Image 1 (cartoon, one colour):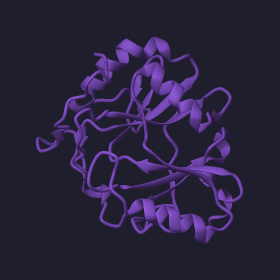
Image 2: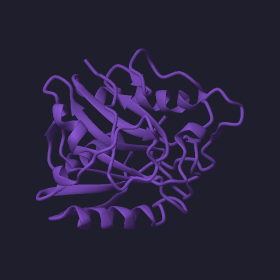
Image 3: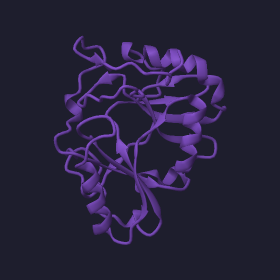
Length: 225
């Protein structure tokens, strides 16, 4: 049975952590083996299974007008998701704190795939197969590398956090995860995020707020509704 996306702890370098956030104290869990640095997209966290579309909570299906297009898309691709898999993504239909731009901006970015029965997260490369199957995108890749020291990894994370987004003038932050598959029980120590200080999740508009704006640029051939 699918369960919600685990909470991601803030990396030691992250300036955007709030007092109630979980923060990692050390970089050690990311050192000595291949890790992925990916852009943290400023969207709504969603989960797609072969039966349902969930938002952050799995207490019921996603509600709110910003998910209508996603649910129509899901109706066309749900048969491509095997039973027992949860595909997690950022749904960037609405403008939150960052307004993305681009002629063919893909609103749906896969960030992880979990085999729920086995309790394992697939390797990073497999996400591209999922994206090809579902006709969507993977969160932008910044770097794959092996880091020997925490200072080396910290410097790379801070560098990428200060660059332009793939789809706009700034990034929300950076997520670090293993390149290879890993067990769900180790998610809390193997996945971390760096969130820029100017990004304030608490200032996002609610999905029911009339000021919540849909993405201004339509998807071209990405979400077959």
